[in-house]
Amino acid sequence: MEAIKWAENRMPKSDDRQLSVMSLENVAKARRFHESFPQYSVTPLVELKNMSAQLGLGDLFVKDESYRFGLNAFKVLGGSFAMARYVAQQIGKDVSEVTYEYLTSERLREEFGQATFFTATDGNHGRGVAWAARKLGQKAVVHMPKGSSQPRFDNIVQEGAQVTIEQLNYDDCVRLAAAEAAATPRGVVIQDTAWDGYEEIPSWIMQGYGTMAMEAAEQLKGMGVERPTHIFIQAGVGSLAGAVQGYFANLFPDCCPTTVVMEARAADCLYQGAAACDGNYRKVGGDLQTIMAGLACGEPNTISWDILRNHTRFFVSCPDWVTAKGMRMLAAPCKGDQQVISGESGAVGMGLIATLMEDGSYRELREAIGLGPDSKVLMVSSEGDTDPESWRRIVWNGEYPSEK
Image (cartoon, rainbow, N blue to C red; front, side, top):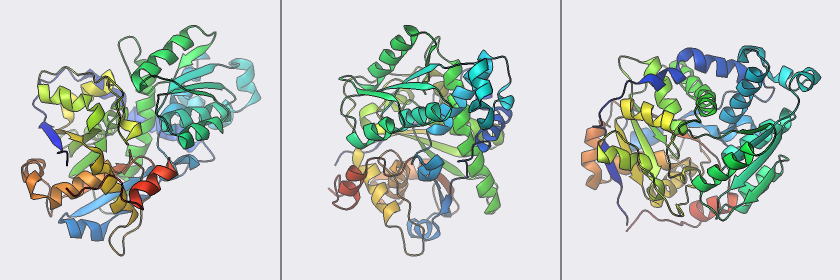
């Protein structure tokens, strides 16, 4: 069985200028925008009391994003807010003036007209962009990498977007979307990764993801937890991880929770950067074959990387069996705990936490992280069963077993 790899963050710090992207004020603006949607509701924060007792933790909380806007994943938070900020910028308004009601009005059609939003996706981001574009009367073009599943493709098509599965990996699909947008009148790239020269829209997407982090912090407080001791957050390009890390670093500037960032083994560019210890990110090429489709990204978001290198304590590279274990545990938790339907990219936190607490061969990492009976742990289940057939094969049929 392939082993988990990890690196404690010993990288040199930067000037930390990107942390302000996730300021409490910026996230509050995104939250107010999302609250203007009739589809908005706060997604559940599930407390797994019996699971935490079984594992030897103080408490374990799972933010369940399978309920987000009826789209089975968190990604729509970023795409919708980035669209709103782009429209606001184009017509000279502050985003606080650009509500759902305004964006869907005839007045917007007169003032702004219609743009075409291009994106690359492994599934959830593209579905969110397509959904938001349809709701707001805009166009969407979505490119998916080779190996993308039919259910995820079909979900995007149902939102009215133009969708293709390319014979390219994710990062090359990003380049294709950017090239097509540049050649299209009123073409705009809505991509949840950043590179030199493309940073504004990705920063808006990250702020949109901040709504989820803000909700979780409020929900924890409502449950009597002023501050989680640990946060486990997954990363593809790192936008979600950077958003969550950035929000909590701003919320608790003097005592930020210990954050553990997890990646799929086939696309562990952040882990490789942390292991190199020089402060520079790394790129991973090839087909990026992993069941964690939403994490199959080999080139990091440069904004997120800067936040993570300054604030994240541990980077962990996880083989596919880790998330498969997490999927099964969340689907069939300890008696009395609420079930969470978590997909391949959503459950890696549960699998890693359980492995650290139960497998003595990872004692060094568990002790370095400081997990134990006083730990109050927050993790994010970022998607539900976005590929139902794959979910059943793993949860019902036991694909990717964690036993040797």
